[in-house]
Image (cartoon, rainbow, N blue to C red; front, side, top):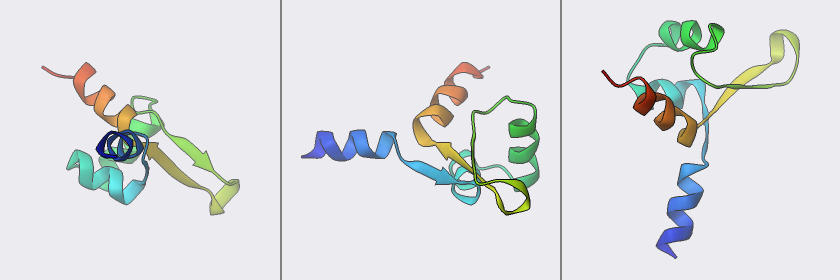
Length: 68
């Protein structure tokens, strides 16, 4: 049961606010990284009403790849 929950959590889809909290960065920095295609993101909807989503697992991969 714990394995399923762990797998589910890895593939969890995050809002911009949740991604900011996870990465401990501000909204402006998250948007800057997203806009430059540094962080993988997914657009939901079209135009001004669209929003961005992030996969938790991809954010952790990005963090590991950008370790100093």
